[in-house]
Image 1 (cartoon, rainbow, N blue to C red):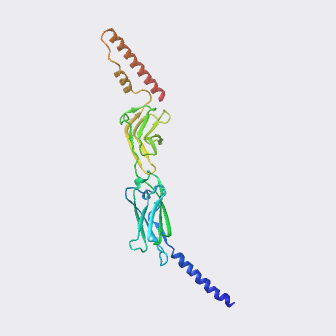
Image 2: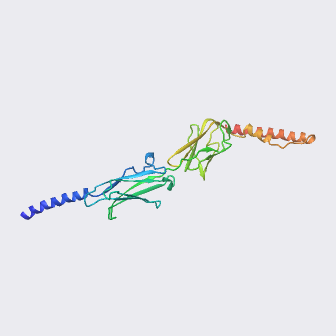
Length: 271
């Protein structure tokens, strides 16, 4: 019985000592919150983005005098040494995010070592590089204050983008197809209703940032617009004088009547 009474205090003392050892363990925590999709404040960008971590838990037997920052994408290594050989409480490294691809996820690791180069702790943080914003501009020939058929092919410059949409007025957005730096959408009478639209809005995205461009006051009209008939007539080659001129004039007149009739019929069918 007396032996048991002696053992209990010993066990209690050992438990207290173990708590002390746990509390004395060196730990490090990244000062930035790891990236969460949609949380813009935790993306990293620029040529000198500061990656830092706070170190705690030093005691006389366990210290951290060297901090080494590495990542899982490039071979770049940043080393932080204590100037006096003592304990480090903060490590900082200036990172050039241009080393990484735009929107790339990078995991950084700080490895802490003591003066004997023995590892005493590590901590990690994951971040997304944000180096570019997507472009957005309509292709030449697509202009405001103009009429287009429902089957028009809409093209937008979307360099640095991973997706793009097109929105006619308040209608549902249309997904554009991406090929290289060009995004396109070709409509039809069922997907692009006839009518006037105050704004045709294109939006490009790289997953982090969005860029918009627009056309103002456009009209979607089925058939061949009158301006196209005029363009066809204007493109007719000059004719010689005399009988040939009369013949060619008659041909042009017939072409105009035919195109106008075709345009009118198409309009009626599209209503």
